[in-house]
Image (tube, rainbow, N blue to C red; front, side, top):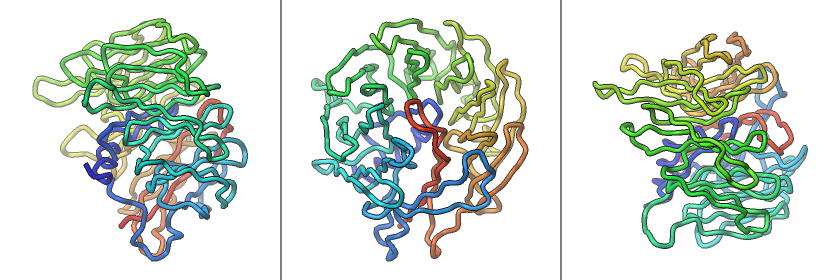
Length: 409
């Protein structure tokens, strides 16, 4: 299968990869048509990203062009400290940069291409999975530390891989075959657990525990939510999510773990829900007016759910907010679908959608008040695709929200 076909399939499954707990499922058959801008005369369209002040309603995007990196960005920059950040490109490169200058660059071997997912541990080692099913560990100096083949040796079955989750001294990765493994920073497995269902999009780490959704990828079989000890892999609890299939999450918001899910109705339509699990049991379930694609939260326990409309009359984007008890606070509607989680930074939320046909960045307060819309101008008339990062993951310094621009052929 062509690389361009692989990328397209991945994005339809895994745009929730930027949700706050950091994880989107990755598939062996993945990834969109070449967006590197290779046919564009002005190469400066590649590898641009913009940031704005943390917790402010952006009135303009200040663009940075990163020199010395080839191809378009697959994900927003991942910061390793206050100055250095990592970039992943669609031409098979992982780069470490500072300001607008590339410090180190690693090229994936054997023609491998990385999926749009990257993680880092506390030592600055970077982790990425490729289309060959290989997990690569790359040091902050750009040198490969080790690699592991994640494919099953006794089968040709196509596997999906969770987004890697960086830990203090290594990484955790899951597969659609139900295997969840923690590797140490030296590449040796610390523990491995086998489940009877696949590890679905996101993996969370909170208070010494790992939280994963287990999915059968079948509306006729209920999915579940599992909590494990991060140090040993021992199971703490498994909660059945009766009658639903997980579509997004898990995401830990306040004292609860939230998942977006849906059940198949008798007429064949999908009925979506937001579910909250705490203390080893489901504590509430609320119907949604959207198919959930991303979950974010704030320090007050409020959640922000992004997705698409559920009726033939409205297929645009929806942003809905719920409080810690599951009461809906407000909802907003957009011209185009919201395929990724809202970014939460300071007192504001940020989502990417269209306004009067123009793609751009929307800013809202936590109470749902509109603050700003900043269109992303096409550079010299070249179309662009933008993606937005969530707030910083654990073990990383908090960074401003970034928007990535890359040219499209």
